[in-house]
Image (cartoon, rainbow, N blue to C red; front, side, top):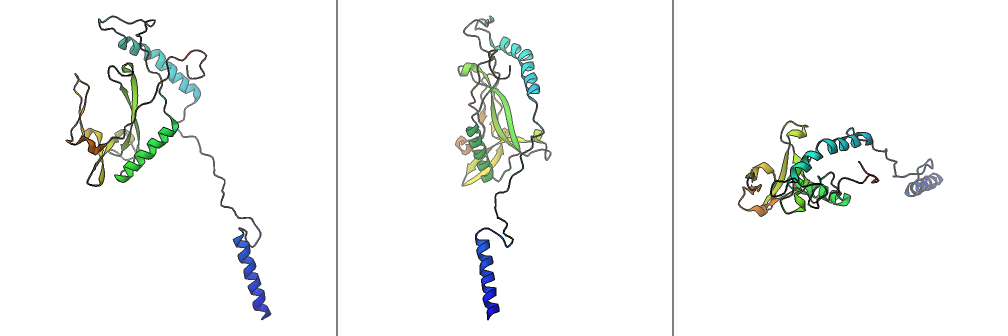
Length: 219
């Protein structure tokens, strides 16, 4: 009988220790494991490399762009001191929370279409006449695997075709016709355009270029 009482007390004691988060040796138990810090991606470049690339673009590309776009209706060049002079777009910014929301949205849409996103493609583009000084800009679209596995250069941008309660990922090239040179306007080939959910994003504001000499950014 004494042995049974002893075993009962021992088992209860062990149960209480486990319930309080300990173990028979008295070592505190915790689920909080310290995480290893993330290593920098292999594609990270140095600040000096970034500055060199930005500066090189400013010296070799910007003058060509500004010479091309600053022509008045009579074909005469517009001088930099003229109020009509348009400076080349040098940088675009995107709100971090908006970017996270965008990533969550495209993951949701791709998931419903049972499609994996292999990457994001950034397209150089331009606003139409009469909007934002016809400035250069970019838009972003997710891409899906289409060519050699693991080579995102061959992958295709896609949109989501919806109908009858189903979502299907479709390559954008399959739902548009090439724009006419005279209009720069593309047309969807599908008869019901509202069945297509675009995944392209734009609307990123630009900084007034070029930055002043005392601006704490790339020069």
